[in-house]
Amino acid sequence: MSDRLKVDALDIEAQGVARREDGKVVFIDGALPGEIVSAEVKRRKNNWEQANLVEVHRESSLRVRPRCPHFGLHEGACGGCKMQHLDAAAQVAVKQRVLEDDLWHLAKVKPQTILRPIEGPPWGYRWRARFSVRHVRKKGTVLVGFHERKSRYVADIRECHVVPPHVSDLLMPLRALIESMEAIETCPQIELAVGDTVTALVLRHLGPLSAGDLAKLRQFAADHPGVQWWLQPKGPDTVKLLDEVGPQLDYALPEFGITMPFRPTDFTQVNPHINRVLVGRAIRLLDPQRGERIIDWFCGLGNFTLPLATRAGEVLGIEGSEALVARSRENYALNNTDARLAPTKFLARNLFEMTTEQLVQDGTARRWLVDPPREGAFALSKALADLHQNPALRGAWKPPKRIVYVSCNPATLARDAGLLVHQAGYQCTAAGVVNMFPHTAHVESMAVFDLP
Image 1: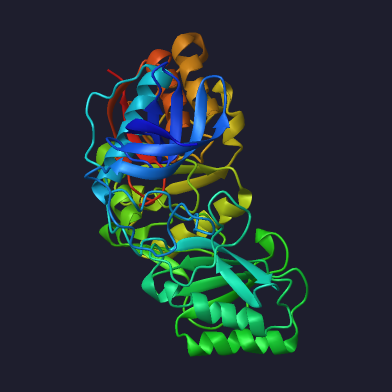
Image 2: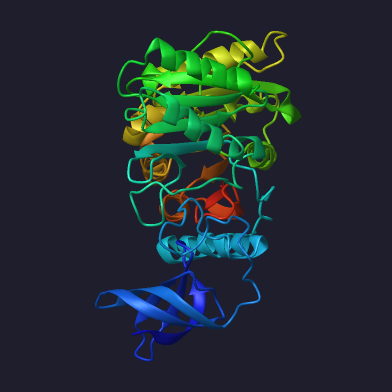
């Protein structure tokens, strides 16, 4: 039996939010704000219910026709996107609301200025992806794609509009390739990494590949110019290029004259169009000066560090992995052939176990760039707050005057913002969203914190 409900809002999982007369919240998959819908409850709890959309009686003006034929609520629908039924501009507004709500409700922080959202192409933007591969004997075929909605099964997709068109065009040839291989049962995944000139495909294989299968991979690359095969027999550290030929996998940051080589299993931003704008805005907001020292926390391969080195007087990049730090040094050397970059040092340290002593030891920097993973930068923020509240621990060390915090999780950003504002003496002077993943519920954002 279905219930008729009025939808008032959209949550971070792109579910419509309605309330019953008694105030009980109902989350409705596929419903949009302003709509009157019929929904069938699938799960009941004391304070909320989960329901599926049955019928829309009054449609939102923001509802649009999904571009992808594999998107939907039906059984077997691809689960790669959640918001294709919502106008692209409205998606950004929803994410902005999520950021502001998290900052206020989780941390009682209200930015003084809301930054204009960073937006880019809504289609063909996803240059990083992980496709599951499965031989389905009952269907007599191989599937290559994302998982079905709320399922462990691989969706039967023949095209994908969020990856570049040339990658979408590879989906059916990849199915045919795996279907022809002896290792049809032991290749569970193909990871995609697109660079400026190379499309890298990482084949995860659970057993050795025969000479015949390797020859088929080489022929596939020959038939599809720009494709480069990498093999992954075990963990990410075992990834190796099939043939050491062809151009290098890299991306450019033209505003700063930086080229960033990377391996296909490295963490790099999914959306290169947005990344270029993101890096530029972050550095403009940070406003480094030639004589200043800057620290880039969670520096990765140097995505922010190297551009900072074109503007600052000295840069320190800190990351948790020795291997990543070694790669950062290589990228710095590659881009510093004419000694145009500021002196830059890279250190490896577990930033989830940061202490006040270690923070003081790293030295004073007038400005910080913080770009943590989803877990956020709690230990770093807590150490900064502890030093603010215990001046005797600081000695000659001084806190940064400005922090630009780039986040991929608004909840952990809000938690850390609460520490910085309420315990470390900062003001949140600006915040805004970055639409890194259109048509998904993922919220990327940026916030600026200043000492008054």
